[in-house]
View 1 (cartoon, rainbow, N blue to C red):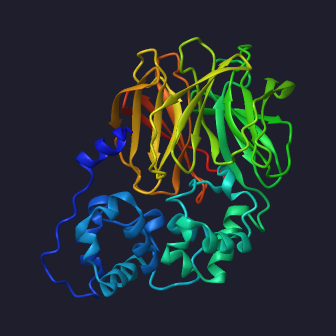
View 2 (view 1 turned 135 degrees about the vertical axis):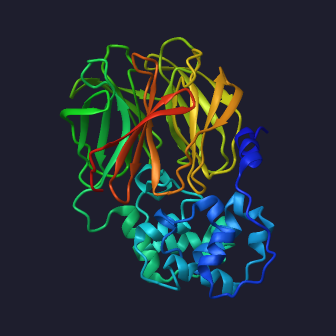
Length: 415
């Protein structure tokens, strides 16, 4: 099976100097500079700040780029503790839920918990039960070492417990038919849905859409499925496996259409795009456990057939979105590695990978995720929308092929 992105990364992934000098275990700054800065930068940032010794040990044992690094495996317990002390993590058991989630969970789960169907309703007791019963989790000594306080903190972060709102970017599309890409937001606590009306990357106003309360229904994508000029919304019910399209007329739901039910909750909609060149949106499905990638071809709002893309079993890689990045008439895939911060493109020709590229710069702060990838604008440029679900910061990259042409910050929206 093809692992093209991984092969590309293997060729350029950071090399950490082999262990040649015996450093004092207390010299965490020196150890960090020698073993970690090549991938994470000279100045620690994001989720790595406050990393505990157990978090680091778990990362070395589970993250692909680190598992294959023989130098990291030579670190002693005392040296790992020294690095943790330098990062400010020490042996703290009072880390925030977001820090704990980013440290212990994102190697298998989505960076934004509300977009991962497996995390819906993840109470502390359900997390504890999963750690003791699911094979991949049972064998992880770091997860077994989590205290009840830490498990509760992770649960509170996942479920937004105690929060008055939890705003997340769930898609982009043209909601007011002005030929500009707008940003769809959902408040997963209250069920509110609103669209930021944009002019390029400039905010123009807000459009309120119908509310849908509860956490069973997830927004899985946005596309103009009936070709009327207005963006429509694809929903997936994580309990029943139902898939429904809201056909929109601006802010109003004109009607809805049901697509085939997919009961396995490990299947999620990874992207919406025209994969067969018929001018109509199709659906890319990705299996969250095995890494299968399948295209549902649609004829408007009707399922037509399916096709299979290469499998990518490394669950550190998530699809950020789909768009024609290189202007060759074929929809491509944008990927993000949620543990290393690498970003890459699969240059597709139909269902075949013609080439693959790493994007620069690397975004090593793993609290940032790709929220959406827009269609090409009038100049043929694609926008990649970013959100930091911890800080609430938002940004957009304007792309020219695989190069970042421009970078802009958008208004901060607190989670």
